[in-house]
Length: 212
Ligand SMILES: [Zn+2]
Image (tube, rainbow, N blue to C red; front, side):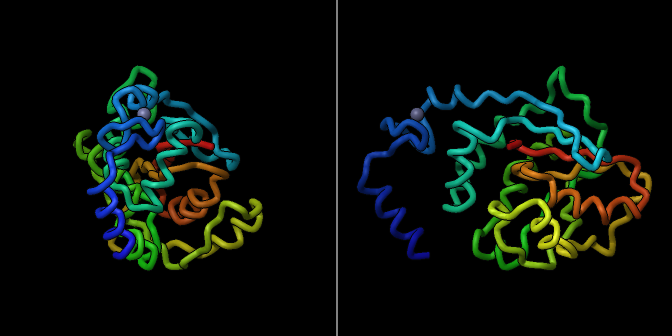
């Protein structure tokens, strides 16, 4: 709360600057930097060999710079702009059709401190515009520490049992897209996939804003 108050105070007295190049411009970034955000869909096979990962950006440059304030400084305006950069249709889109789009969830404690799930900010309107079904059907029941400095084995151990499917969900025969902001080693989505396979889903694709 104090941080937010200080930020609005500073916003009121300082000239507004672009997050990427520091040029004076209306936030979060200047028109020139907006043109640097060009999506290019790439397909990667998950090491499990059981699903593909589709990502719109490489996790570097402006996308990497912007995800930090978006997630950790609660800058939803940045998320709104990133969300608009996700193209609805493209000749290279070969995933789908999808029945249910499911976001990777945050633990309720983290959701409370951040105020929003960044995956919802990125993808909810995208899915709505496709007239498709967005379901927050996976819950995070273990509040895991940040995974970025853990080895793959340690990530898997930490995430074991971290998720639970919503009991009301009926997934048999459904084509599922699991949504996340960044695909790094895939440990998180593989842990959720372990819950999805026994439900006899028809197919699984993982779709992320960025890939490391
Ligand atoms: Zn700029």
